Image 1 (cartoon, rainbow, N blue to C red):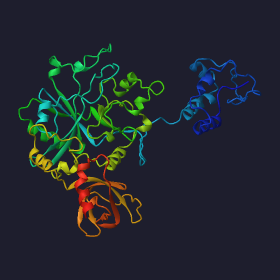
Image 2: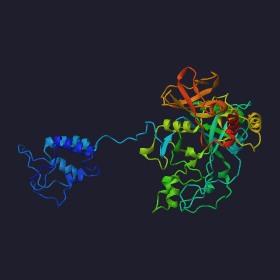
Image 3: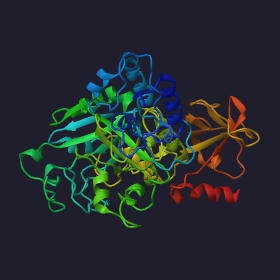
Length: 486
């Protein structure tokens, strides 16, 4: 005869086996406790039981057949065993599960996603919202060029048939200096949303009705400058019919990036979405449903570079699609990914009121339209662009010692980079993380053959300038010709 409750020592033993992996975590201990299998052996000699021998010194009669209901079972147990039951169940259950983030340094991340705490969400709402922003920012928001992303193959409730692509732009001073950068999202009109029956309207259908007259543009901006940004836009608003609000408590900005997400051809098909289906084919219906969720929010290709992956704004109380707990990372991973590719973001990395956008590669990041009408600071941008000579650019850096080994945490932002031979200043480090950084350097000195760069206040730290693969050839063509002639 077997007792129906384990002692505390056996419970600890079972807990150790469970955590060590010797016992399947999916095994139901409670099911075997309350509902023993009718096929299990009844003899303890033939079947070693998890349950201990009964206590003979209790006055209560041991249970021959445990009741099927938990309440009756607890009432029938001896008092000493009933007191230990909650403790044993807590021990076997283990600690509660938490969403853990990757915090260590990534080694070529395949696919990672992170919530961008450094970005806040601002909403521009009103019939003149898009026109108001178009008159101020460096990029064209009113262009009606068709989206490069393909139409969805299968209907997904509350997801538009075609999603307007996001736009990267900047607000400048009248002198053409950088103030703020914005990633702008124009939610699809309700006429482009699919109904519950899954029937989509014709692609390109013109919005109509009173509901569509209320335009809306969402923008993720630098969270450290959101208050100043709101005040700046409200000064320019004058009589424009647009409301400007900080909605960071309602929405969050997310980024999905990595080597497996980067691609050369414009597409919305992520590698993980392509793996859904039979064989090597693609289940486009599953892919379509994986791109968005029931709120109509979805991942969109980063408007700056393909290597940056996907970006999106999602409601604060939801987790975006395709974000698994084991792939959610700390924002430092994304910062390091941008540093290695030479992409600055926000007023912390781009000096506010001082930086010239073309020197920070804004033209290559699709942030400037040279065909639209006037905007604030256009004169300097147009003159510098058509002159065709930009002598300094933001470039990725690697910090090493005299043996060419990477050194960690040895350089602070704002450090000067000098030529060891001539002693002349070449540029300044703008961002540093570990052994990597970005700096605004003179191209003729940074990219010349056998260059010897170092940190001015720490000559033991050498600097290696790395030209990103996405740079256009014409950016360095003149420098390479001068280096070859020398």
